[in-house]
Image 1 (spheres, chains in turn cyan, orange):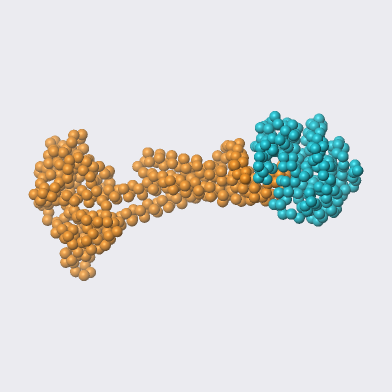
Image 2 (tube, each protein chain N blue to C red):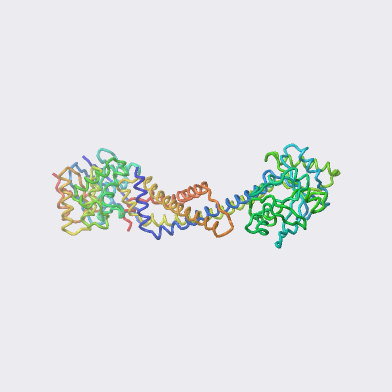
Length: 224
Length: 402
């Protein structure tokens, strides 16, 4: 079991009122799974993704990632976990504008102080099929290429899970299909992938789907 | 770890915003440039003053008759400094190295149809070494020539130019107040010092001057060179006591002479130039401080602009410390770059001041180091707050920032 959560609760203060974003989330992800988290906006899926991605901590509940309880770690330790165990793919790519593709992919390794960063970054770019454009800056790349580069950045540290937040949201249908194909291919090689989306077309390509509404899991499909 | 990457990224982002980078650095550039050129001016002034004092003679005491008067007005008799006083000082005061008795007058000099007015100094053979004169051409006079009241003269280079223009005066004969003197030497130029121009004077034996030229039985001045600087004040005190006794001054009666101590002049001069330097340095330092505020302003803007970048960096594993370091290094690169440009401009300005004005400038290496480290310190000081703000950003908020 790579991810295990028990009754995660998270509330936000919005002006005067308290918003219950997560209201007792229990779920597990096995190693090698590809899971879609679905829900409309305001359902709490973003909050769940932030907690799964160790960008935020739950108010209560337990989150065990790769055997380690990360629900109460300091922000410095969380940064290390993000660096080592999690790879992020964002809807708007979030590559740094002044670095070329190779330097962007290298960055997590540099923060980790890893050796042979350049070679490992090149390997990651090869996996996503971007080896020909490694010296291009983000402004010179197409949307599909940007998302490939950011997938390369997510896998370069060999993380336990890849967390993709609406990865096809800013892409046309055909390019989105290509990106989904890359995720499927990575999954076929054993990577654990969690995709947060509101598009059923995307969710349907994942073996398992989790529906969230009002901070609760209302439906799980495809679990064997 | 990614120190070089951070510097590279910092330089890249500074280069993409050239105008803004330049404006942010301008304060530091002006500040450092001001520090460098102002301190160069101060150091140059100090150097020139010291050179001039040294050119007057080394370890020098000068005795004038009369009291040190109110606002420079002498009181009391001015005829009580005798040749015997000079001899007694040399013989009886320990630590005295050389003594030169001096009489002076302003006289008409004549060479055929050319004439000029000049200072005529009557003194002994020790006058040249005590007053730090060197012979450019010819020779100084001898003990024997002084004794037999030889009519010989050593003239300054400006006097020589006035009377002889380009030709060499050594061996020629001039008339001083109608009496023939043959020129045996010419002194090396010292540079004008205002009221008393050491390059426009005629030095003759004091015997000749007192008996034949001016008809005096007293001295205008006694110049004394002490053996070393450390004993200068003690020698001054002992001369005071000796002269007081020789002039039979009663208890409580003020001295009928006064002694200028070169150490006092040096002290006063360096005090003045030190104050000057501190003042200039303070003004320059304030402009450096203002420059620092400019850096802080631009760094705050940069942090806000790059909020999303900070969020991404945090998401992929940057710790607060990494972000802090990154923005701190950018601020330091900014201010240090400004500092380097400022040093270059400051040195240039100092050289231009030296070229186009009469001021001497002198850039010390320590000043450059001081200015550079001060500008880097300004970068750290004023860069810390924006960098800390960047480091403490919430990654989720930062990622959402548009």
